[in-house]
Every structure is written in structure tokens, then in C-alpha cells.
View 1 (cartoon, rainbow, N blue to C red):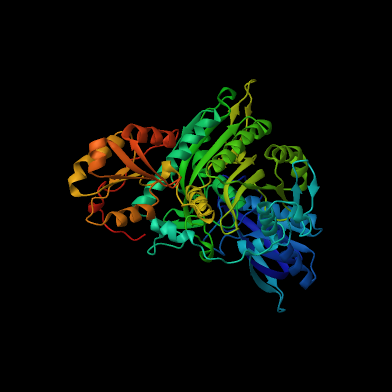
View 2 (view 1 turned 90 degrees about the vertical axis):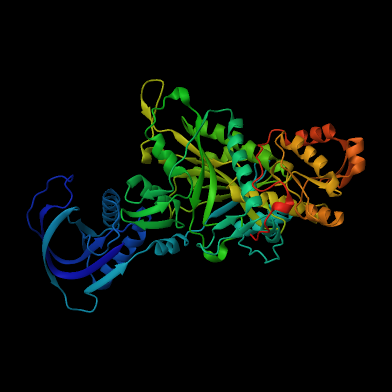
Length: 612
């Protein structure tokens, strides 16, 4: 927001003609004022309703400095080239007008959307002519003056104010979450060994791009795509119809719904300017899915249902805080929105989603600590019993953050963050779920109820696995925790880039090794052959470095007996198995998970050495 401020002894204006055709006709007569502050004001693209309180306080302060109580807001589009959409600008100015009047000042506003002529007598003192620029950063600083209130909710329903002393009675992982979130305890820097393993598997930064943009070599790309497919598959386990869509990442900030949703999202918007204007890069699938839903004819018979996309998403994270496979500027969100009749149905679906989120973490040997955010004291009172029911169900304490009344508004009422405590002892948010009561109206999404009435649904936002990258982070965190327990680090069988490696003793066994490879590959397994001219110990060592779950060594004895010598990474055992016995074990490991072919040659001698 930009303001040119004049302290005038006299000021008069007259509307001349409409600058915006759709506006109502008004009287085109002169209006005159004496002893006032004239605020020529331009609402810019980044401005939102959150700017109102800050702008009001600035204007009140300037009025006090020159001793006036009369204010004229004068809409003036000539102070910036980055103008807000018409309706957004009008709404912000009208809200500022109301807020100033409520403060006790005598306030007027010149017509919005009209060309006007004016006459002015500006006083000659040092404060008579001033300018102000109010940015999103100003609002953020103001917002931080309000502090969240934190509570611990126990499985027994107790409400406890967090403190260093009280934390002694709680488990270590929950203490870590509370210390960071509620008590503001800084995290200690430690050597991040996982980064080396991520790079070994082909995850790296693209140095020719912006900060926080990854590139994925074949192993990493394969892991990424399998996880994406799995994120799609688990939505079906909720027992509701799910519609998968695809869309664009670019949304016009001049669209009212897009801008309002972006304003409510916060301060990490990634933007791009084109010949059509300024576009926000989506930070989840919300914009695209909501735009589609506004065109769908939905009746109560179809509810609840889900709409899903693995969406390329963008958040303008601070460059110093980006972290490989965790905090990125460009990432992929397997975004599921569940459309429900009302808040009660949304809470029922949230419970199902919650159970699925917890279950998926357990499969990796991980447990979640919960941070439940609510937007106000009033919402906390409404949701208190629901939050207590989650704590009781988990038989674990939950940390609750109650947002202050001042500052940012939100499109959700309750937001649950699912944090692991990683192998370095750091809280790491992986998944989230939230109840949205505002965007259906904002984007014009309706359903027709049993009585034929149009109603706005309540929308549940969730990514059950978290972002694709953060789920991968959790996969590797689980591997690091195995290592800390003295076990071999490994990925789950279904997501391992190479599931079986066959190592022939010499070249005379290559043909038999190929028979085994084909038999396993035909069943959907990712199998390769180390046909390089190296020693057996070196071949086994390289397979171990790549965390291959099953290493099959074949020689003349194996060919003659039709038995395979199999090294099993998970149990650190070596077994002699028939091919069918091995297949049965692989089938058990793979059961229920997606399969995918390899993204590289199945012979090691044919592979290029790559650097992530």
C-alpha cells in the first residue's frame, strides 16, 4: 500500500467520469473540506485485509502529529504499477474507512473507480507533505506482536501450561516438540549424515536453478515416482470416491478468489510476472482443484468425495533454510481435498485421515508427535472435546497452539501438524490435515442439499504422506535410526531402487544369472546383474552400499542344484533358497505396494557413473 499524505487547510474534489464501467452512477458535484489530512492511497497487488490495522495506526499517528481529526481517503491508482484487483482494492479501502471511523476520527472517502479533479491548499510546514509505503513485511512484524498461547492436552483430558519443570513427566520426543514450539528452545547444529546418503541415491541441488530446487538422478527419480504412486493408492483406503485431476501451477493474482486465498496463506508466495500480469505459483493444489470444483454440479448424494493431484508446488522459503528433501522452494504435494456436507462430517473424515497418517508412519517404524493449531480461543473452546478425543485415542499428549486475536486471518479453523523427531533429535513436520470453512464460498463451490438448497461445503485439506520429498526424508530418517541401533540402514523393499541384485561368480554363469533375472523381472521386481569384471567381495560391497535388500550370488553349484545363495539385508542372514522360495519372500515384502520398472540398464557394465 502506498500513501501520499497532505495536510490541507482546504481541499475540494469533483467526480468527472467512471474509470470502471460497472460502478454505480453518482452525483458529480464538488465536495469541499477544511483542516484535514488527505490520504491519496493506492492498494497494491501484495496488499490484503491484514494490512488494515497497520495502515489505520499509521494514519492516526500522522493525524495526531499535525493536530487534525478529519481524514479524507482519496483512492488514487497512480502511485504504483502493481495494482490490486478492483474488488480487492475496493474492499480493503472500505474496510480501512470503517476501521478509521471506529477509532473516533471524522472520516470521508472520495469515490472509488472515478476520474476526479481536485483543488488543494497544502500547508507549508515540514509535516504537510509526506509519503508512506506499507508492505507485507510491516504486517508480519506487527503480527508477531501477538503471541500464541500453548497448552498440553493429556490423554486423560488435562490442560497443562508448558514449562521446563512440567516437561519432566513427558516422553523424550514430546518434550523435544514442546521445547522447540512452545518454549522457543533453539536446535543444536549437528552433523547431518543423512545428506550423504541422499546424495548417494541421487538427490541433489540443481545449481543452475534457484535456491531450493532439486534434481533427481535415476535412483532418486525412481524412488520419487514410486512414492507418488503410493500416495495416489492410499487415498482409495478412505472408502470414498476420489477424482484425480491435473492442472497448472500459475494463477492470476488479479483474480479475487486467488488473491484472497494467497493473502490468507501468508508470506511465502513465489511469484512470476508475465505479459498478462503477476501470477502466484501454487503452494498446493488448492487453486486448481477449487477452480474445477466451482464448475462441477454437486449434490448431497455425492458427498463426501475427494479430489486429488500430485501437484508441483512452490513456496518462497528463505535461502538459508532450504534443506535437501525437506524444505524446498519447489516440491510436490500429493494433495487430497475431501468435500463434506458440514463441519461434523469434516471432523469424521479428519478422524479417518488421522488414523491413516498414523498407520503409514508406523509402517516405517516412526511415530508422530502432534501440534494442533486453532485460530482463536473461541475455536479452541468449540474443538476442545474433539482434540481431547484424539489425545485419548493416541494415548499420547498433544501440544495445542491457540493463535492470538490480532494479526493474520486464516481460511481454516483447526490444523493438525504431524511431526517426527528425526535421528538428530529435531522436530520435522511431515504431514498435515486442516478443516477449511472459507474457500468454498470464496471460489463459488456449492452442493445441493436434500431440500434443493444450495450450500457451501466444508473442505478437508490433507496430504496423507506429507509432501513427496518429506515422506522420502522420513524413509531415510527411518534408515538412519536403524543405523543408530547397530543395524544396517535400508529403505523398505517396495521403494528400494534395486530390489534384487544377482552376482554371478564368473562370466560362464551370466546366462543362468539372466534366466533368474528374467523370472523375477516378469513378476514386477527390479532386478539387475553385476556383470562387471571385479572381485566378488567388491561386488558385494557395492550392493551393500546401495542398500540392495536381496543379493543373490550364483556360481556353478547354484546352477547345478537350482538353489540360490541369498544375502538378506533386513536380517543380516545368508540363506540357501530355491527360486520359488525367493519369489514367495519377495511377494510377501511387496504385498500391497506399487511396482515400477527400473529407470536404468539392468546390467551394471552398461551404466554411466553419475553425480547427484
